[in-house]
Length: 415
Image 1: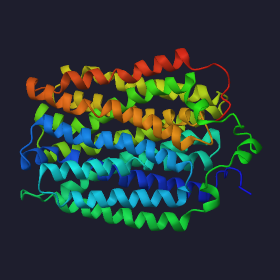
Image 2: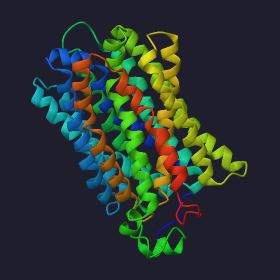
Image 3: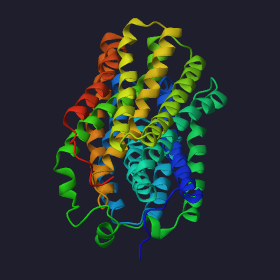
Image 4: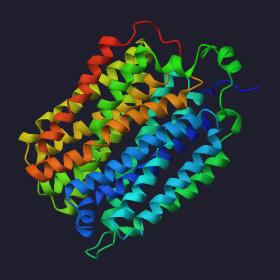
């Protein structure tokens, strides 16, 4: 017989720590290329639009993988699925360090995106199974903060390894791949199959998390899912545009030297981590003081959305302290949105959490991936990054208004 969701124990939070580490590896594999984007475009003789196509290939492959692995996570024990996808994306990162052509780079990023997509359905399936509703936003904050840590560590590694020699960026990909292999071993020895196996219908009815009406179609054909579509498109478009183009914006758009850009990115990503953890702590603190779980999440989401909206000032900010301050607020808010969004999505279905997560991920990446070549073409023509970055900073505020206006007032059946 399946055990009920595990309460807050050392083992539970140890597993959440492993999720953080997986997110860190995931983001290091992803962000290394963006961090050295100027070197890549110079070494491979690419236009901004061609670099945008590399990121679009990654994003569309991620969109496909999100659905594939989302469906798989509901049917296969996550204890085994998770390390397999992590090893596969680590292999793609490892091979990236050897590419010599634009086509090779495209293919490596394509398959990297496909396999990296397996991370989120597996991770969110884990937090949903192991944590009670009042702790899930904090657990998802720990999970999501790993992306910030990966983005923090990557510039520091680059500062130590990059030289003036062409190709000095290549060994970093092999190092990160080796770390991924170690994580897979630790995960298998740290987890228990009975806690991460697919949930049978009998247990869903028995533990109060749902009933036989908890079907995939009931999860996606309702108002909450449509609201989450708006939310995930808005927050992902904003986050991904900054993730890909911030290093270029700082170097080409604001004249920072490479080392200064790397240090700026270190502090930017540190701010994202602070914002991510703070969103989880705020939600838990508000609930502890008597605010409902849903309202607590909405308050945290709204504060983060308003912080991101300050990015609308970017066109009027030259390099300096003003730009630094505004971008730190944008950073904290942009990642703080995600743990709130994840917990909203976990209200839809217990049995089909992986499939719901995967479908939302597909929608997010299908809509955000084409932005990059379009944005690159815009930059090629205007020689400015400012307007596009300022506009996307308003999207989370729009999502927040949709959340307030249309989310059903009744208590969620599944938390």
